[in-house]
Length: 278
Image (tube, rainbow, N blue to C red; front, top):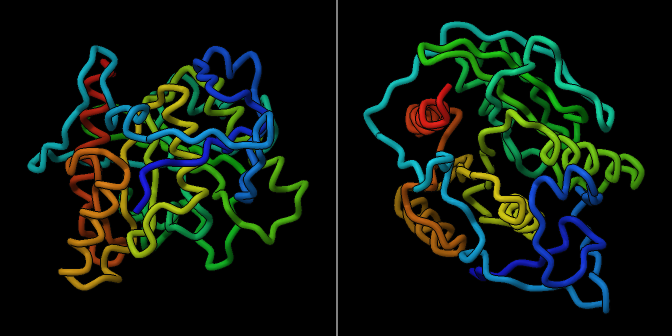
């Protein structure tokens, strides 16, 4: 698996240029969530090694990447749908304003909504909309979660890479996502979902590179772990971890069906909130 990526998630950027989140707030570039690469100036997309730029998972502001404590326990008390935003520049829902945020990012149909429902104990009465049709999540949805370590807003981003969506819709989703990521002051980190059966796609790598470029802490979650037999699952985890250039405790395989990895994921999110002072 290659560890270099095409830096074309935010098209129109000059080669070798790395911007801060403040720059992106003032000059938000457009994202193409349909996954079509656009060549940068000069017709050649810059290539860079992900290892050099990827921040540690849920990295505390005071330094050093946080590690997942496997025996940690975070208890969810209640959860409510806080609202959604569908327009660029729209503010977060009032009931989610000021709360620390954790966003969930991934390709269409990778299982973001299903994972959120499983984490929150809402598999029988889903609070995050689940559909077998890619591209159904077209807004940024906010969920206010009350837990034993405080309140947090979980943010379900629209899935990217749905090539059959109309061009206008894909461009709008991309700008909506990047506008949110570059403007919010409350975002503590991003949970990047990857299908364990396929590893990072080109679209995933563009998203990961963008997050690294703006210095966003990232935790990698491998979905649908139950779809592979134990030996193949172990090999896939090792290959994906090496390909991303990260440590093994920065990657959590999960299964919505069996619940495997959910405790570890909640623990990682709990550490993020505690380390950020919330």
